[in-house]
Length: 81
Image (tube, rainbow, N blue to C red):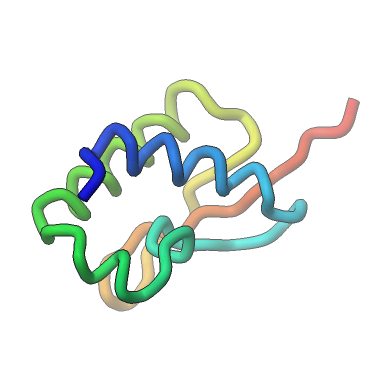
């Protein structure tokens, strides 16, 4: 199982494949069985790290509302100049 920083890098790279306006959860970047194999504590940490990445360093993704299961939802925004 890759460490959390590797999983974060994978999620960041996958986010580049999204279309403008597309909404997603971090777990969408992983196949169901892959996501389920990640220990819960690492999934929580991955979510925190991804949110920190979005808030501090990324201008192409914004955090939107949380789902009913308390998962953070994001939206891909491509700024046009």
